Image (cartoon, rainbow, N blue to C red; front, side):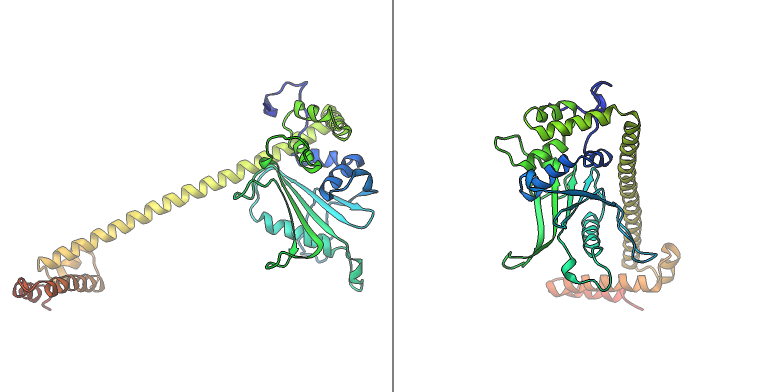
Length: 328
């Protein structure tokens, strides 16, 4: 059973790849980059010839243009660009944000006057340590532009790969390389990484990188600062949600009380009308307007009319009541 990171001893401490600072540091290693890229593209690591890290701040075209900060951006030898983003907490408008990053990465490849044939494939990879798609158990999905009727892919120039670590299935034999990488990235303690390193040289190298990072005092301070920022953001969002819920409940309670008072007022007006109390006294007692009294009088008239039409026995009796109740 996995142990919570905060309960481990000082000697057992190891950074977790789900913290984006740690993930960025891991991706500085070319063999690790090649391994993850190969798993995503269903290639052998040796077939991934070159992976270059690119700047993680996209250029601004206008002074007020929004710019996106990407976790890790990799360019392959054939020009394909891949943006890896590690996310621990849920963000509102996450789908909009991911689509924005992918679109900006794609259009930033060319400038005015450039030919469209310079545009190369761009892939947005979102590694989520929380559940986004609530309706299924799929831990991995590839999203591309396609015909909505036939399902035929229109182009592979734009892709999104979404990895939900929280949906990882129980371990099984002959797992895909991608599923194994997801297990490694989702590790929660030293034993998790050590176990995977025993049978795979790339995971062994990744584990060694994590071990060295965790022993580096400066890196550890940066890691813990980032971890704190993530926790603070999560607490802030949960607090805002709670306060919003409480405010909504209070508002609903006040609205309910007001509606109850209004209904009680209407009941009193109706009873006073039935007791033949003059309108001016009803207004003095209840504060009702002429319109409110007229509406209640009309409501009483409608009810009595229905009773009158439904029973001939009480016809004459009802006529007398109507004459008294609705005299002007």
